[in-house]
Length: 177
Image (tube, rainbow, N blue to C red; front, side):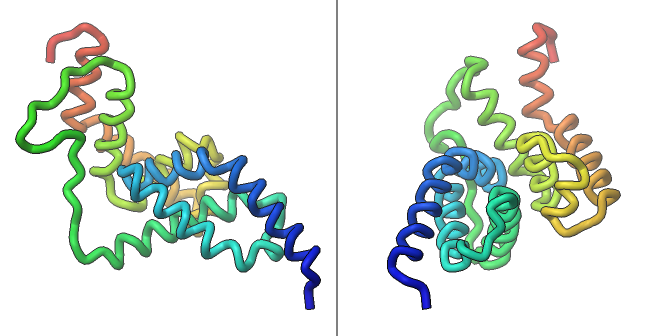
């Protein structure tokens, strides 16, 4: 039986980790979900599931463990979803805001990521946003390195052909589409 001081120490360690990594976890979840509010919900759900097992999680692999849990919980969220959401950056009755090449660049990329299949999106986020090696991505997704390579290749090919990103790249380079 654990004493109250042991439990208080675990709680403090968990709280410190959450405070230190919250922003990074939400960013990863945002890229996986395409919606800030769903990203926060995903991180909260993942942390709530991890908390009872906190003392058994290896401190050296905690971030990796939680990233994998985020990906798995996002998969479960997709499976359970009964009503599909149409996520748009503006209300249908209002005109789209003009491009400003600031935060909108990120919004365009997130929208393009949302168009990828779930597995490809997870590979792109972990490989290029989290800057994990092929082996680390394969380990976190529970697949082979070859699968990571093929999924990344297919995802990047789709992103290169995404009309929104093509139009935006032309604007940035000063070319006409």
